[in-house]
Image (tube, rainbow, N blue to C red; front, side, top):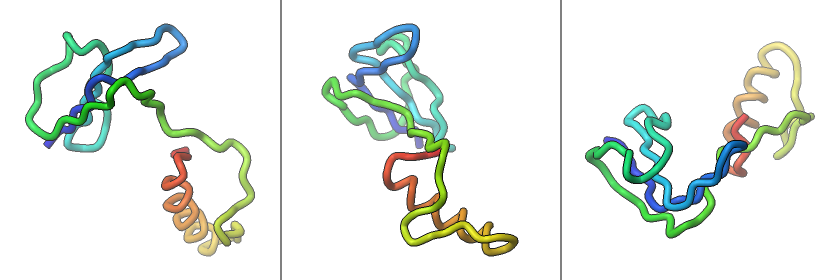
Length: 95
């Protein structure tokens, strides 16, 4: 089921949209982002953001580890990265 976020404030390099709508598809990806009047009608929950700013996840371009995780080598590196990725996503960093 899709999720709709209404009445959001979206800022891009090109424009600022007040009262925008975002539709998140069943797969968790953004299916629509834009003016409310052009948004598709979908089944599923809808949440009114009441004009709040909606931003994408942030990207940390320089990291050595954190949350008690120091990146190792080989298989340890893979498990360390997976653990760190799960933790950092809860802090708004998605990439």
